[in-house]
Image (tube, rainbow, N blue to C red; front, side, top):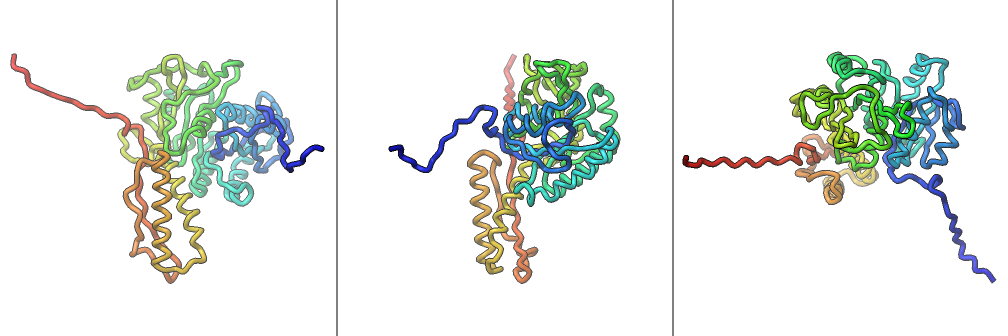
Length: 368
C-alpha cells in the first residue's frame, strides 16, 4: 500500500523556475503579442511567463526585448506595463499617464519597484514625470540616449536643463546601444543592461566596471580608455552620463554616478549606490518604525526603536551593504511624544569606488 505523506514533489524546467535576482524592476513599453493587458502592473518571474505574457513582439516592440535583456542577468522580479497608442506620440502620452501606477504599487504588488525603465522614451515631459514619480516612491529612473547619438551630441545635450539634460540624483542617464552577440542587427539599450547589472549587486555596491552580457559591439564609434581623460567614456562620465568601456575584450559599464554629477563634484549624492543605500536604509527604518505603532508614545518606546535601528545597521554592516555607522540617537528637539512624533538621527557610511584606491608615496633624499 502506497504511503501518502501529503507532500507532492514536481520537477520543474529551467524555463519555469524563478530567476534569482529579486530587486523589483518596472518596465514600461510596447508589445503587439502575448496575453498582457494594457495599463496593468504585470509581474514576470520566469522565462516561461515572459514567453506567455509578452510573446515575441514585433521589431518595433520594446517590452519583449527589454525583459529578455533583464532575464539574461537573472532578473526574476520584473513588472511589465504595456503601453498603447497608434504612434510614438500617443504611446508617450500613455507612458506619462501610466507612470502614476507606481504611486499605488505597494497596494497592488506588495512592494515598491526600485528601478524604473522606459526604453526609447527620452522627451522632457517623460523625464520630468519619471523624476517626480521616482522621488515620491524612493526609486531610480534610468534613461538612455537614442541609438546613433554621438558622444559630442550627448555632451551638448547635458549642457542643457531639459530632457536628458536634467540633473537629478533620481535619474541615471546612459549612453550607448549594444549589439546582441547572436543577432548583431538587434540593438539593446545600455540603460536596460545597467538595470540588469544593478539587480545582481547589493544596493551598496557600485555598477562601475561590471561586465555587459550577451553583447559584442556598440552602435557608434567609441574611443575607449580606462582612466584616459581624453577617452569618450571619461568625457561622458564627467557630465553625469554612464557610458560603455572596454576592458581587454570585455565590454563593461563605466561610471557609477547619476545625472546629478558634474566634473569635480564632491557630493556623495551623485554616486548611484550612495542614493540606493540611503533609500534602502530609509525603507528598512520605516518598516521598523511601523511596528512600534500602538505602543505608548514615550521615551522607553523611543529607546526600543533606537535599539531596533542599531540592530538593523549592525546587520547591514555585517553583510557588507554599508561600510559602518556612527550615530543612532533620539533628536530631543524634534521629538514630540504628545503627537507620537519620535525623531531619530541616523548616520552611516556607504562604500564608494574612490575609497578602494589607496596611494602611498615615500620620498627620500639621497646624497649624490
